[in-house]
Length: 327
Ligand SMILES: *[C@@H]1O[C@H](CO)[C@@H](O)[C@H](O)[C@H]1NC(C)=O
Ligand SMILES: *[C@@H]1O[C@H](CO)[C@@H](O)[C@H](O)[C@H]1NC(C)=O
Image 1 (cartoon, rainbow, N blue to C red):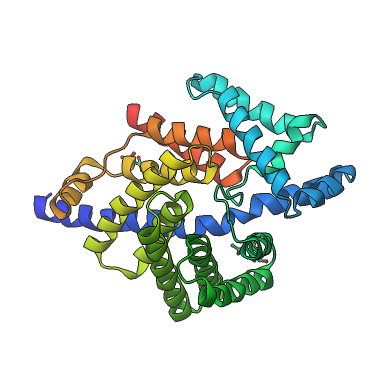
Image 2 (cartoon, rainbow, N blue to C red):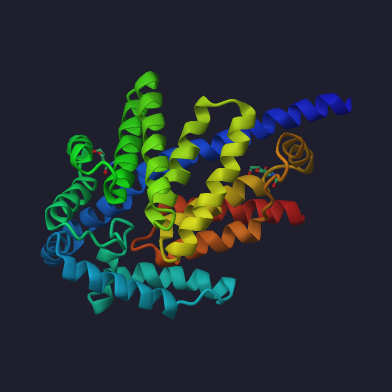
């Protein structure tokens, strides 16, 4: 085939690949809320006595949050990164099994979501309001909208608070996603871009804030579907850069490992010719392998408080493609 045509087809594939990646990063955060709800439902159905625990855990109790974070840390240390793949896979099954058990590990399944901010808010009034926002984020669409307007009000008083700004980025992102699902693409775009603006501002104020990096990465990714190809590709490396930075600051956040796994999967899936084309567009095209993607998925699975369907699906896709590549 004419090499030029190959290159053009490659180019399209890169666009699609990166577009898929960034689009997925966009919807991903939406889905992130679902495991929480699935778990609640599960507990309601199968273990009514857990319900009170769940509800107690959802109270804005700073003490509970602190101990939760600690136990996540211990858990993460217990299940070290260096285990082999088979061990890891067994580990996952054990984790699902453990989940229905009534041992003290249960605590960990409530408190290690990324909603638990590492930050300490010194202003007690703001701290209380932010707790409220975090609870609203776990609720229905209406709750999400309330969270968004509450944050907008807070922004008037606390314009330079990173704690407020990254949550605003998240809230705008959620709003954009909700409008997108309703088919309102203009509103979607408006909110996604607004979210990016808030995340950018948050990062400018505090370069060492993991949530600011995370939401910057996500909002960069989500914007991708409205951008040109070179911008998309640039967005891809920006996405990676800030997920990496967030991970360095918050290594036990399962959602960050999942995002990185997804990124590596998409990049590993590019053919060599597509990679070459990407190399023409940006100086340092990303490189990644399926085993790398697998490792991040496994890590996400470990750290996730619940079995995570989307993550397992991605893991399966990695394994499947790895098999067909090495054949
Ligand atoms: C917002 O509302 C939806 C729909 O009720 C809910 O499932 C979700 O947990 C909330 N968060 C996001 C990100 O949509
Ligand atoms: C990309 O993914 C598809 C779908 O799973 C697969 O058929 C193809 O072989 C993959 N390409 C590479 C280079 O891994």
